[in-house]
Every structure is written in C-alpha cells, then in structure tokens.
Image (cartoon, rainbow, N blue to C red):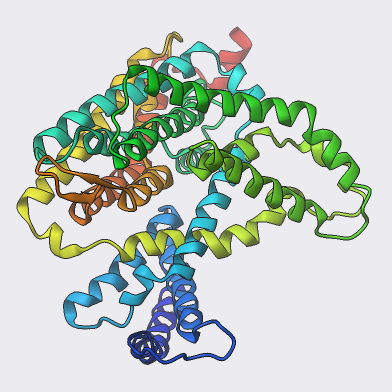
Length: 465
C-alpha cells in the first residue's frame, strides 16, 4: 500500500513540476525581469522541486534500509539525466546562484550537526586504537587514491591528484552509526573503535582539505608552496581547531549563560546558528574552508552550555536544528546529483577510474583495521565499518569543482572535472551501499563463531564467570 502511494506521489510530482520547470526554464532564458520583487520566481519552483524529489528519493531508499542521503543524491542524478532525453528544464538549477548559496548553507549546517554529534571527551576516551585506526584509515586511502589519480589523470597537476585522493579519506560517521544502531551493536568494542576513528577521520580529512586548498589557492596566484608553507597551513588549521575548543571551554559557556536569561523562544537556535556561521566566517578569514569552522562550532558546543535555556525551551538543540537541516541539507545532495553528467560515465575509461577509486577506498580502509591494538576484536568488522564515504566525500568533491588549476599543458581546468566528479559519486554510492550488508554479515558471523565456542546459554556463561 505504501509503495503504491509513493508511486502515485512521484507521478503527481512529475506531472505538476514538469510544465512548471519548463516555464521556469523559459523564464531563465529571457533577459526580461520576471519579478518586481527582486527574486526570480523560477528559483521558487526550482526550490520546491528539489525539496519534493529529495524527500521522495530519501523515503524510497529508507524503505530499502539505505541512508536517505543516497536517495537524495540519486534523485538529483535522475532529474539531471533527463537532459540526455531532451528535457533541459532543470538545467538552470545547476548554476543558479541562489540555489547554490542555499546548498552551501546546507553543507555548513550539516557539518555543524556532525560536530554536535561528536564529543571531545568521548574522542579522548576511545584510546589509542581509534587514533591509530583513524590515521591509517586516512594515510592508506590517500596513497592509493593518489596513485590511481596519477595513473588515470596524467595531464592533471599533482595538486589535482592529491585532491582526488583526499576525497577517499573521510568516513561517514552518521551512516556507520546508523548501521550499528540498527544491528544493536553500538555498545561493542568494535563499534566504539569505529565511531571514534570515524570522528577523528573527519577532523583529519578537513585538515587535509585545508592544506590542499591552501596549496591550490597559492597555485592560482602563480606561486608554489614549499614544505614550510604547507607545514604552516597545517599548523594554522590545528591552531584554529585548538582555539575553537579553547573558546568553547572559556567563552561560550558565559555567552550562552547570559543569553539563556532571555525568555523568548528560539533564542537557543538563533544563537547556535549565529555561532556556527561566525565560526565558518572566521575559518574562511584565515584561509580554511568554512565547513571546518562549522564543524569546530558543533564540536565545542555541549549540552552543559544549554542548561539556562531549559526553563523556556521545550526541545534540545539537536531537535531544534533538525527542521532547519531537513530543509537545507537535501538541497546540497540533490544539487550534487544534478551536476553528475551521465554521458561521461558511458566512457569505459571513466568507469574503470571509478572502479579503481572504489577499490582503493575499500582496500584502504581494510588496511586501517590492522592498526587496532585492542585484543580479541573483529578486525574485519572494524575495516568494513570504516568503508562508507557518504557526505564528507561529496562535500570535498563539490568544493573541487569550483577550484581551477592549470594542467600540464598550461590550460586552466577545474580541479574536479565532470568526469572525475561522476567517478567520485559512483565511489561514494558503492561504498555506502555495500557497508550495511557487509557489516551485518561480518558481525553475525562473529556472533555465530562466539556461540559455537561457548555452547552454554549466555546466562550460564555469565554465572560461570
């Protein structure tokens, strides 16, 4: 019944939005103003279409026990691929500045949420295993990705090869946590190692992005970075994160405690998002990606900062920000899907590159499992749990599409070309889709093996211990 309802809704959306998008596209080609209020109405219908298709795609994928983010991405790919059939009404969404700005704000909110879900004290408690797994899980995929990019993109610059490699580094915390929660395995030793390492992976991935981004910005001005300059960017990134943590410890509590005396509802949400945007601005001011600042903002905020708001706020910050996130974040993923050019994926060399990147992404994370120093842990499950790339890889790829570098022939080209972007999208899709199945298989096999080695009922085993 639900499936038929979903099909009817999808059909209705297509019937309603197809002519509307066609009219919007005609308006996009016209040089005459289409609104007396400064906002072109085509943005409104485009925004509406993105939200509808994002939610339908997310709903469909969740019915198959897959992350909603993949549904949003695939929805964008399907709408964007209609160009191949002659339907070009949605093309204006790919380059519209307002839609692009909303997508960037969505990414900032997303990284702010990731930071809120991460806890500094928990990161310190996970021990050396998570740290070593995280470092190995960044180094191994980076090296493999660099080799793959250098082989398949010989005319591109070394910085392009490094940027492609960087998209393989981060692990999706949200996707891994959700799979482990669904399997009832969040309390296991393997899960604690994986989740701790995934959070550290994100931090290391953002630091790598900061370093490579700084090198690319320098190359755009015709200057080359030496080892000292690269080290300086890395130090600057580390100082920024440490400074943000210090601000969270000494300044933020006083700020939120005073703001908590205001009795109007919505102050907590407004102040938190303002703090997020301010940190994102500070990050860009020192030459880092704004998402680094957004992540740092979420990382330093803690529930203890919001105690003064509990008298007149009915919801926690996570609950308050959820509607904002559900409205803005899907725009980014649908837009990323829209920008995938399927015509490039028809080329055997691009598909081979995508397959090689996917192989490097999977094998690189299996290597990191051997870095765990804990005894009697399922290393295969640790490696599998680190596989999904999810949102962070997409964010890095999206940033790369807006950066330009000269290739070996001196011709300026995007750091992430449409063909490379399509290959990265395929890598993200495959690594995210296979993780739930493989992780369930690995953990079930481990549980079965433990039951065979301990044939007594669990109650008797606990009593004997």
